[in-house]
Amino acid sequence: MWFTEFVGDRIGEVKTDGAIAEFPIPTASAGPAGIAAGSDGDLWFVEEGASKVGRITTTGTFTEFPTTTADAKPLAITPGPSGQNDLWFTESGANNIAKITTNGNITEIVVPTANSAPHDISVGAGNVIWFTELAADQIGSDAAP
Image (cartoon, rainbow, N blue to C red; front, side):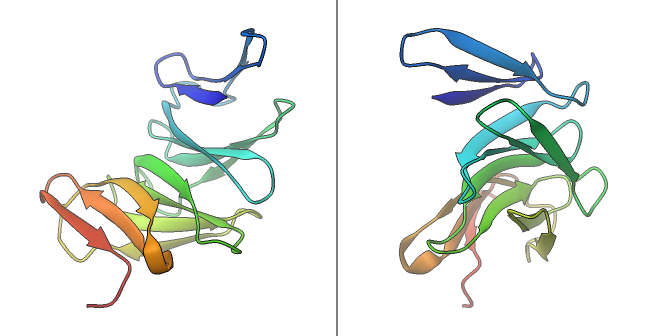
């Protein structure tokens, strides 16, 4: 099982025998949060403090991708719809949801409600991307109304 250490700036793994391995993130004060398995077999996470998306292999090798918008403050990440090689994440500071392909290309989508602070994100039935809008106290989706 893999997990993030927001304050410790590490990604951790609990092995089947109960041993814990920790991997320090290359960027200081990154604030890793959320972690999801990508279709590439790697683990993906967001770095709120560094405005990056990170990837770690199961052997502990990191790759970091800066968000397209400065100070985006990504908060959560989820695997994209089945059969697609992407992950979706929220950018609370930029008021966007975004997707990143497993080769690192980022596409941002502006959330229609101004200053809504997108927070959590998930894929639902019909491959619709759902996300919470913390400051607006509502739920949004990528589905057209």
